[in-house]
Image (cartoon, rainbow, N blue to C red; front, side, top):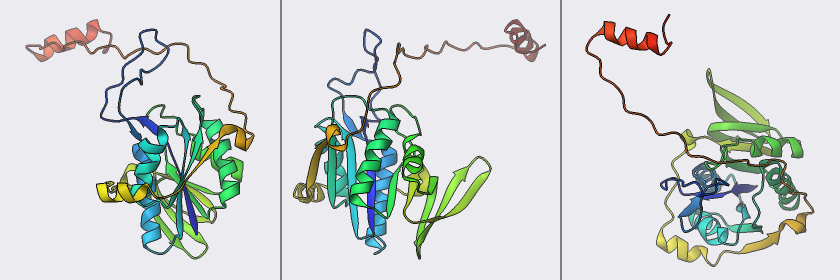
Length: 250
C-alpha cells in the first residue's frame, strides 16, 4: 500500500513572527523556515507503517516555492520517505486550492492512505484534510492520536471534546494527525546525505489544471496588543472594588 503525505513549509516554530511595516502580512525575509510540526508527525506515522510492513512506499508532496525542496522535502526523505513531489508556485495557495491540487495528485498516485497534519501553524485553518476528503469522496479520521491498519480498513482513535472516539474507515482513507500520535524522529546527517539521492518530481500548478485564484483578501495584519502590567491589591475588599470598576462583578 502506498501512503501519500502532504507537507507544508512554514515559519519555524522557534522564530517569533514579525509583521511587515506596511501591515500586509508576516515578514518572511531572511528567517528560518521548516516543515509544519503536524506534518512531521504525519511523516513519522507513514514511515512507521512502512517499517511494520503495512505500507510499501511513502510519497511526500508539497506546494510552494523552490526552496521547499531543501527546507521540507529533503527533511521528509531523510526521515524515511521514498520520494517527493514539488508543485512549485510563488503564490500563496488557500486551503481549498491546496485540496484540489492534492486530489489531482491522489488520482495520479492512487495511494491507499493519505496522512497529513491536522493544521498548519501559520494560518491554523484546519481545512485541507476535510476538503480533500470531500473532493475525493474518501472517509476521514481527523485529529488522530492512534492509527491501526488491519484488513481492508484503518482504525483511527481521534481526540474530541468529550474524550476519545474510534472510527473504522475503509481504505482508501484520509487521516489528519494530532500532537499525541507520535514523536517524530530527527533527520540525522547520514540520512540527509542519503536522502539527496531519492527522487523529487517537479511540477507546476498548470500541470494539474486547477484554479488557485485566491477567494480571500487580507486587509491588514497587526501584532497583538502588548499585555499591560498587573496590579497588586492589599485585601479581598480592594480586589472586589477594582473588579466592580471594570464591570466584572455586579
